[in-house]
Length: 53
Image 1: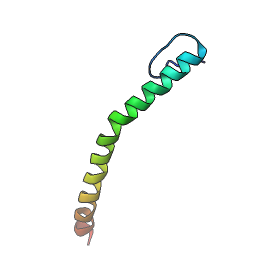
Image 2 (image 1 turned 30 degrees about the vertical axis):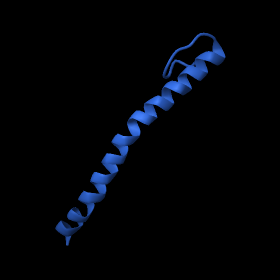
Image 3 (image 1 turned 120 degrees about the vertical axis):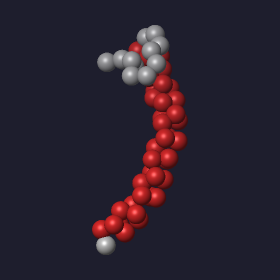
């Protein structure tokens, strides 16, 4: 068990911290994309609802 998920580091604690930092930076990059996707879903859903009715 190490912190190789996102960023490396040397040693157990440092590896875990590096992985956590890498994960946080990844989330900060991914959030705008997720927000944009949610906005598109909110825009498209009424159109789909209109097609059903």
